[in-house]
Image (cartoon, rainbow, N blue to C red; front, side, top):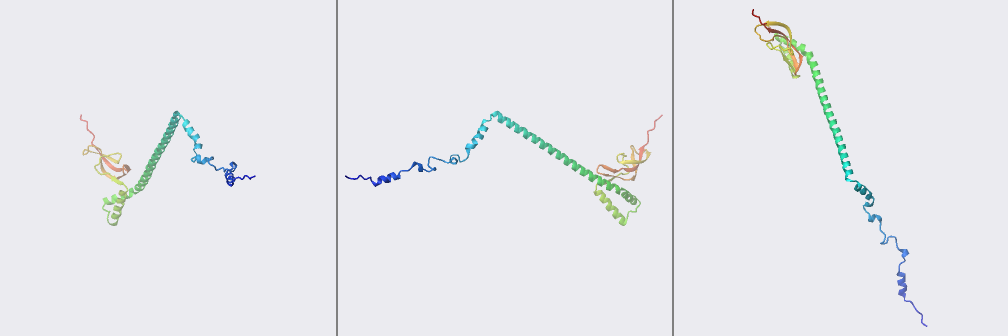
Length: 209
């Protein structure tokens, strides 16, 4: 009786068969969620849905609200800018007034000295070193804007002249300055001191009988 023998390759083929329990979890039937959704779009679906759910009426309302807020902010900015411009103008104006008042006070204090120089000039006493000092002082006050006015023959103007004496003359047709007692001075349009003068008025009309 012969003994049946199984071929050796039969066992090899059975050994080559794989056990399903030994398959790894990394098999081709399983994939990583990150591989399927690399950009994380699955989580943003809710946000996209919210935007898509808004109706055109809601979007227009939001746009109108944004325009209203922009208009309000623009108005506030324009108001603040206008207030700043006005403030700067006031500061510049006040600075100019302070400078003008300071100049006025200093030059007013020098008027008696200028009167003494005029009297010395009239009497021929303005000579030598005194003349040089007088000329320098007159140049300095002129550079600061102090101007002199008042000449014999000027028409009398109460804004610029102070009448010390009145007389009548047939040689004039209007009230006229005859003698300049002390000169007047002004800074720009501001009178520092009016000229003190004697004036002559026209002869009064005589009624014929």
